[in-house]
Structure formats: C-alpha cells, structure tokens
Amino acid sequence: MGWLSLLVLGWLVLASGCGGDDPVLLGFSGQLTGSHADLGVQGRNGATLAVEAVNARGGVASRPLRLLASDDGDTARGAIDADTTLLKAGAVAIIGHMTSSQTLAALPVVAAAGGVMISPTTATPELSGKKDNFFRVIPSNEAWGVALGRYAARQGLARVCLAGDTDNASYTDSFQTAFEQAFAEAGGELVCHYSFSSSRGADWGALLDQAADSGGQAIVATAAARDVAALAQTMTARNTRLPLLCPTWPYTREILAIGGRSVDGIVFATSYSEENDRPEFREFARRYRERFGWPPSFAAAYAYEAVTVLASALSRTGGEARGLGPALAATGPQTGVISPFALDESGDVARDTFLVTIKDGRFTSVAGE
Image (cartoon, rainbow, N blue to C red; front, side, top):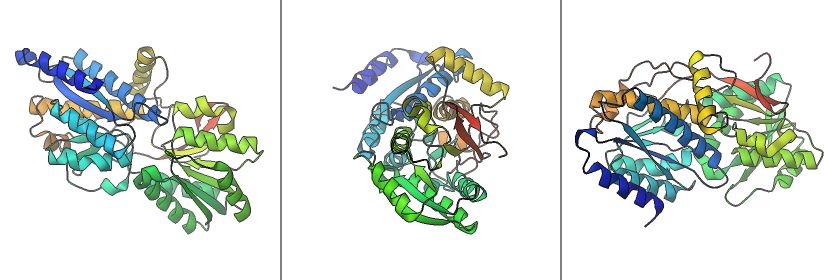
C-alpha cells in the first residue's frame, strides 16, 4: 500500500466518527517529484495556504477544509491514478493539474466519476469555451503567444527558431501556433523548429547549430524552467547569445536557481508579475514567504485563487460535491490575489497579458511594455 493510500485510509477512519464536523476533502494533483516539480510543489503550497486561510475564517458550511495532495508523476498514467485515488477518498473536487497534458489525460476520468476539476495553471486552448466539469483561473496561452510574437517583431527580429517540449504537446503546440501567426503577420519568419521530449532529454547543441545554420536571431522556447535554464547555460558555454523568449511555463524561481547569470535577459509573456502592488497580492506573498521560506511563483498564486473560488462555490453547496459545477460557473466576480477575475459560463477566465524579463537575477517588468 502506497503512502497516498495510507493517507487516504487514515482520513476515512477519522471521518467515520466525526459527525457534523467532517472535513470537506479537496484533492490536489500535480508533479511533486521529478525535474518539473517546481510547478507542483508551488501549486500544492499555494493551495495549502488558501485552505489554512479559509479554515481560519471558519471553514465552509461550518466544516474545515482538508487538502489531500497526490503526485501525478508528470505523466498521463500518473495523473489518472492520482485523481482516481483522490476521488475514491471522497475529494469533492480535484485542484489540478499543473500542466495541460496531465489535465487532458485525467479529465475524462474525473468527468466519468461526476467530479469537478479546477486547474491553477492548465492553459491549453483545447479546453476553452466548453461547458463541462473543467474550470481554471489562468487564461489560455494564446494571448501570450500573440504578445510575444508582436514583441519579437518590435525588437527588430526577423528570423526566429522555435523549440518545444512534446511531452506537453497541447500547451506547446497552441502557444507556438499563436506566436507563429502573430510573428508572421508582423513580417517575421520561422527558420527552424526543434522538438524534443523532456523525459528523454534535449540536445541543445543541435538546436543552436540549427539556429546558426538558418540565420535564426532568437529562440522561442516552450518548456519547463529546468530545460530553459539548461538551454541558456549551453548558450553561455558556447559563447552564443541569442534572445530567449518564453511563455509563462518556465517563469518560476527554479530558472533563477539553476540558470544563474545565464538566464538574464530571458523575456516571458505572462499574466503574473512579482511586482504586483495590490494589497491582496502583497499580503499573500508575505504570508507565503513566512509559511514556506521562499517567494511564491505564478503556480502558487493561481493555486491559492483556485482554492478560494472553490471554497466560495462550496459555501453554496453546503460543502458537498453535488451541484458544485453549476455553483462554480455562477460564482461571479472574485477579488483575487493576482487581480480581480471571474469565471465565465464555460469555466474560463480572462486576464491582462504583459512581459517580464530577468535582470541581475531578478524578475522585472519589460521597460516600455
């Protein structure tokens, strides 16, 4: 019996004798181990902080929230197994997944069980505009691709190479398509396209050779923080400096910790900034640092918001899973910690897009954008 099964069994035993004070169980699914664990760990921590905040206010329907966290292993099979176990344990909803591929794999299983999934960071447009059991607090990544394509053209870049992780194909393909269309409309040209599987490893030297041979002036890298950092370090080792442009995915603290000075100058298209001056965000960031010892990333902030909007909906269902989907669709405007937001009738959300770069080892807004 695995650690999650033991944890679930313990909760079931406790719940059997708790009467009206039974906790409302929330399931969290994300990659908590492996090379992309920065997203999952930060997501779990943000969800944990939100659960603690809700409980400090009296919980939901006079019942405390309890978070059961499961490692999806960053694989489709792992995502299905994690969600199946959480739902069997009595989780009223799944908070996850943190990458689009895992969400797409597990969503049919959750739907078949009559469950609800709310994702902090799944940004594929493949799930946009559907009235189903899927909700999210992050916008579709197409807006980021458009913004980055237009930015590249404004910077005078005419020839660009794409590099993308096929292990998260739904996210990678949609972002790259949006970038390509916007860049082409501005007169730009894609001169090489390098695909790789992060689970099998990438040959960054081969990518840089392709870029050199094709006259590429920049690389648009759609990959996780560890992979983008490795690409930047390879450029440094080869004394090659091409601009690196990325979507939100690698915009985490891990890219700073791994990449060092090599990652300075990378530009991200995002809907999240550490320079957010909203009192709600400042308070969230302060509590997160005190609780976990380091600053939050976008994954933590979105996970916090996912739990808060979920708790709001649960307050109208009495803490029960029954009717939770319609309750989420009808939650209305939310204050949010990143910005005010509202889920539309399809469970999607719209947010502003802006550009962030790394300067002297810190994330900062791109000047003039």
